[in-house]
Image (cartoon, rainbow, N blue to C red; front, side):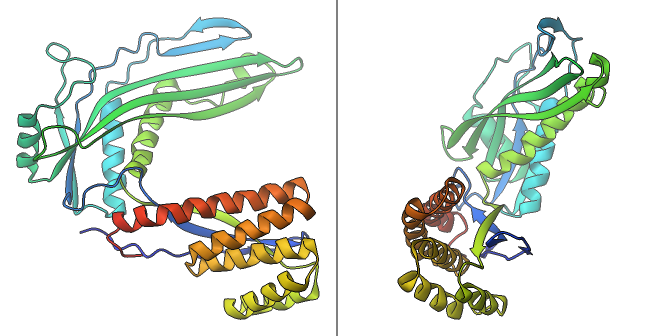
Length: 343
């Protein structure tokens, strides 16, 4: 069954600081990129990618000179991606069941790159697993880039493993894919050393880096289909006016309403600087109570006041809060659809 998500903001900690604010850490629920139809309750993930030739996949630039690295073929790359994705989807419990088919549906002798599954194949796969849909990995490529720079007294090196995947989602009853998307991402390492070898000494082998990349790509693709929790950091201003201290005491007692009354009074009577700080606090408190529209409006009031009275860093923080709350407000309807209204 679809997991019932309860939208909420969970206070993890208040970081004590000598600054005028404390940092409040929340988890917020973000919607998936694609809204899977609610009738799809079980899913089969299959490997329909054309085998990748990795002859030119790994390249190094060593102090300006290109060096072709040994060919490292990871034939199990697509299987690693699929296994990681199936594990992540099963963990999130969004679908009733997630299967991984071990058959490779796109062979060198009869296949081609980015081949679409035929309706008969989709039907056969769904029948085989008694599933509602097929998620097909139809392109899987990888590569590694190493760059070594001579900094004078030492060498600075970077290594990135990059991957390109292409996915299609098929409903067992439809003739065309419901959804298709590409996925491009990179994982990164860096190192410093007295010579070239020392600077790259901590890097994984090309094979290990490719395997780690496959696991990462599979796990993160789950966000395309399933809502996910994301940590955010908010500011609560606690000084600059004795009333901020009083409001913080009410907030520590989990009485947001009393704290909001005090912040609202500061907003009406305070200086320009106190206005944007108190409006910010109200916005964060409203967000914690699920009042996203009001939170967005107060965040805008904070941003406007901060532009006139705050420094660059404070203005950027106020703008970031407003932009993120606008995003959350716009995503609310999409998120409600994806989790069946269980917000």
